[in-house]
Length: 325
Image (cartoon, rainbow, N blue to C red):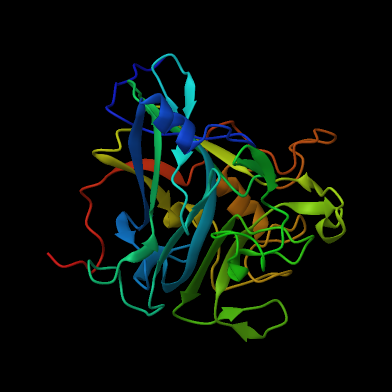
């Protein structure tokens, strides 16, 4: 067993619901601010906005970042005994209930790398939690079925994007299937066009992750159930938010993917069981695309609880590509 290191303050996540409210914590007089930084890295360097990318995929190719967004939820602080303490997220245009949207592109939507004057849209999670000694961070990737807002359950994954509260109102993060949402949206534009199975060409190679095999129509009040949830949890047993950040490794996500070719189905991977590009992507995420064995029933489940190869802990001192020195 690894020795855990105490930290001043941290955060974490997992389940469907978060019942701790900011007002309740504040009333107790024990609430302390929590701030968790995220970064998108590629080839060992922080990237974002429209930064040029290098050494992507099996061909070690160059590309530009076209889109980079993901929903995260259920943040919890972990103490040395493994106890999880929920973080109550501040409510804002980026955070609703216990769900938040991370967006690594710049507000202007251009092709320039992130700088102090051209920052990524949202890379920090903020909230409150009881004071204490914590050693780790846990959170989940995806849009949960429900969350608790003002003491009431609110549908999250399957709700009308046109009437949903921010950040659930982002059209670019919505599926067409039973009004569900994309949990992860990454798109890159290789230096040369992507060649599709029929010989035609397209600009972007995409990774869109969300729940699939869903039944039920939320528009008519039906409960939506999805056979393949495709949510996953990230548990970091050592994390100090004052000196460290959570890094999403784009190089790792695309490590075994050919980003200038598509053998069938949607371009890149859009979570389909029969898409030739999805096995490599799901393996990088730490998810089972289909059942791990006949009759296992673990399609869309995490391969190893709390582990996703694309996430790691990094130092906050790392410099943004293209940033002013």
